[in-house]
Image (cartoon, rainbow, N blue to C red):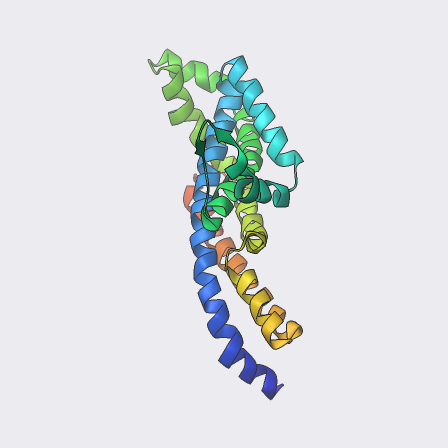
Length: 230
C-alpha cells in the first residue's frame, strides 16, 4: 500500500494533472456549445418551418443513431479527405473532439429542450402575442425560459455523460486524463494503480459538475412554482 501511494504521488498525479487541464479545456467548450446547439435545435424543431424541422430531425437522428467513436473518427481522420475543389478542412485533435462532442451532445439536449417546450401550454404564446410581442419574442422571452428550467435536469445529466465520454478523445490522440493514464500504464506496467486514480479523477469531475448543476437548478427555481421537497 505504501508503494502504491508513493507511485501515485510521484508518477501518476503529476501526469494526470497535465491531462486534467486538457480534459477541462475540452469539456467546458463542448458543454457550452452542446447547450447552445440543443436550445437552438430544440426550439427550431418545435417552432421552425417544416423544411427546417425535417432537416434538424435528420441531424438528431444521425448523431443519436451512430456511435460517438465513429463520429470522432470522421471528424479527425475522414474529414480531411472530404474536399471541395482544392479546399480540405483539417481539424486538430482537440478541435475534432470538441466538435464531435458538442454536436453529439447538442442532438441529445435538443430532445430535452423540445420536450420542455411541448410541455408549455400554447395559450401562453397567444397571450404574449396579444400583449404585442412578436412570435420570436414570445418564444424567447416567455416560453423558452420556462422550458429550459424544466429541461435543465436532463441537460445537466447529458453534461455529466459528456464528462465521462470525453475519455474517448484519447482515441484521436488527445492527451487528456485517459490518454495520459494510458501512456503511463504502458510505460510503467502498473495498469491497476494508474486506472484507479484515473477513475477517481473522473469521479471528482462528475461530483463537482453535479454540485454546480444543483446550484443552477436552485437558482432557476421560481418560488411557489416548483414542486416543494419535503
